[in-house]
Length: 285
Image (cartoon, rainbow, N blue to C red; front, side, top):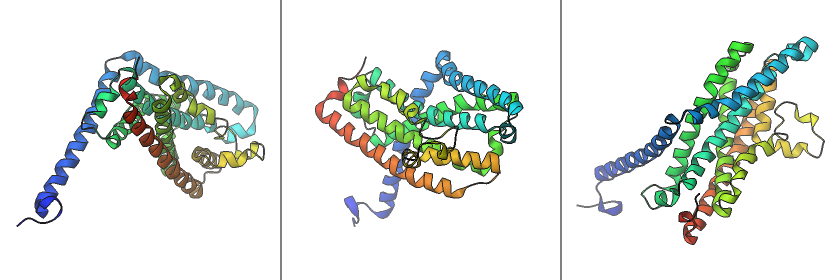
């Protein structure tokens, strides 16, 4: 006797769902493996991932060492600049890892083929998220180790606070990656520079190196509408006052949910438009 959706028995439906999830996981892992091969086969790509975070960390680290000799605040807040630089690079590298992996599919004229395969848009997004984490790990682990070696700053020494800071920054980086991917789908590769610029446009507003109170009064509400602002305020509370501000993290999380939803919605909308217009197979170098 047949029962349930599609005329399947309960045990058959369970097997069908498991097979579907397994197939989805295989498609995501295949996409991640494809980008891993690209990273592994090109040492200049790997070097580029590490180069800019390393240069920034050393520059700001040596500046902080100088300021520590000249001001009492820098001495009391040892690691403030280095911590801010490392967290900022998590945001930037996470977003670029997502966006560039997507752009590489366009540059190679591969996105149209992927969308004609069983790969679903949600699986494409999941694979880009994993690729961004892989690239972020390649970039930031050596830099974090050198920050400890050169300046004695242990990022993991922030404890559970670091996990909250990292989680909020990485989710925001994916939101920006989704929005930049949507922009490219809508306006073509002529808009690819948006993927490189979007994070740096937010740099002055996220209060990476200074408190929100430093901004003009009319600009502070704009800064407080961005999740990274609460992350960097939380970092300063951790480093200077040795207190974990859970309220900041909750506000950042709630804003991140909004931004991620907007990013995913924009990506899905522009992807549907590109499919309908046939522009997916026309984009590429």
